Length: 224
Image 1 (spheres, rainbow, N blue to C red):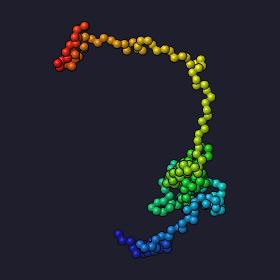
Image 2 (image 1 turned 90 degrees about the horizontal axis):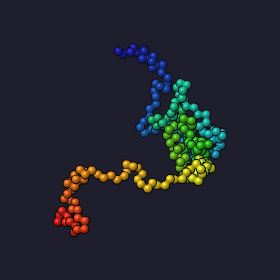
Image 3 (image 1 turned 180 degrees about the horizontal axis):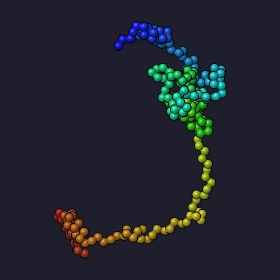
Image 4 (image 1 turned 180 degrees about the vertical axis):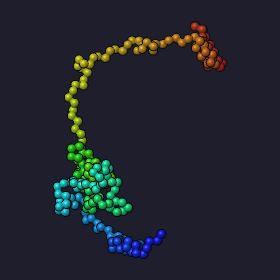
């Protein structure tokens, strides 16, 4: 059923001006891209600049970050990535929101903010708020920096035991000597039954040598 002309005109007037005639980009025209970061080649210089101190101060980059979510219970997992269909989400993670932060194994000051100073374990993304894509890059860069000797490697301290492990104290007795006979009574040699011996001799009679009489010449074999 077609709407009256007056109703269609009223609905068109209720729309905002920017929605009535949205600008269309031709195929040769591209959307404006943000300018590249000046610290892309040397990302560690950004953490020593006045711009970084004015933004974060002495706190880590993830300090005070809170992800927007519905309800009072925060999600148990972080985002897979802060890009959706090539566009950045409204509330990106602490690394994706700053274009001057780049994950690199040489950027030691940034990587050190995501390592626990007591255990040397990389912080879980639910604590720092970084997306899973950046968390994987951080874990890889931290391992690479530790291999290059740029980051300290936590080695657990194991104290030397002071106990006496020798066998020269009264709690340890002497090893008893080995028995002269068999270890177990059922392990002694037993004479097989005569019926079983006769059956084996009958089966392999063509391969057995005839028993020679004591003191006589050796009996010929079955093939001779």
